[in-house]
Image (cartoon, helix red, strand yellow):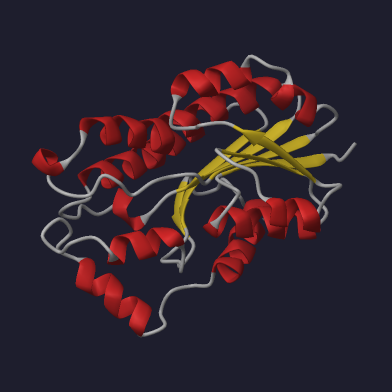
Length: 243
């Protein structure tokens, strides 16, 4: 059994896939939790990757999965559990009158409910050991943007959750809500495809892409994992990878 294991949500694409790959490249077993599976990662790391198909936007589906022994079995024999709450969505974009209420509920489920539920589940299972919780946050949690009321609010919720958990000072638990910067992922493509009337800052993100100023997922993932494994992890409950 490995003394260190990681749970990564949204591991099938983008930053999540890059983080999972980086962790396994370092020899750390990963439990990937997402709606689907990654054949690419499975082929590259057959001995290190475990996958669970869970709709994290659906709180009942997550509760049903946690009622199984999957997470407990994965963490068996683990002295340090790493939880990377990466899965998230930028939708819905627009003013409240332009938002689909069902999409709002889904965003809150995926961006807030799932990370908080998984944080509680992992912390409970690791009570006699240690765990590190990393929320993938955003500058949008610390600055308000027109059109992003749901995204900003959900990322701010992760930041405040981390601040509060840090104050709990529970033995063996370290946490940080980390903004990783602007990364060249499918989410960025979604942002650039959003009509300007719904997201007034669209042009800024188009310019960043055209100027080559977006971070490559693999480069960002390496910095995120280095941060997660650092002895100083958790010193700052809310941080920015660019600082």
